[in-house]
Image (cartoon, rainbow, N blue to C red; front, side):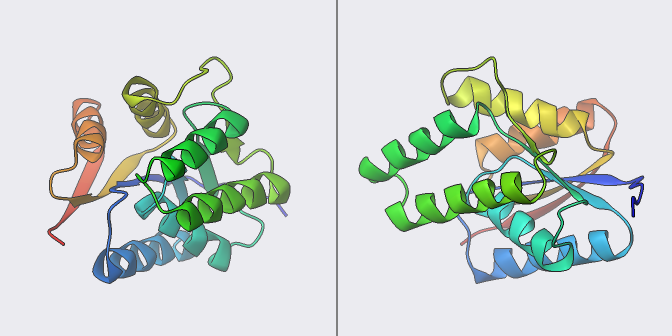
Length: 172
């Protein structure tokens, strides 16, 4: 059965989170999906991970989910593994995220939108990914910790486009 989703909500937020941020993300995603909306994320750790996980709990076939990556999943996974060896992210978190994205691709291949043109993951391709997320959304829900620049980039772009924007600010 195909259900048309008319309201796609971009979920953007910080990689650095705590239990309060996670709770707010999960509650928000649950409300969006149970009211017939869909979730658009960027496939990162933290807020994006929680949003994707909660979507799977409610929608095991991931029909209410779109994930935009800054590169292919193969390049993105290698990037996260490299960042783990550099001590930027815990290795177990990198592997959990990669497993989640692989599960998405296995469950519903159309959900994972890879950028086939980019060969590196960097600030430029992350910000391009933010733009792609907004291109697929009708509104933005941002979970911003300490005015994180990536989340702020998404907020600014959404406002420039005239999208509805709700920002939850956190200090953890």
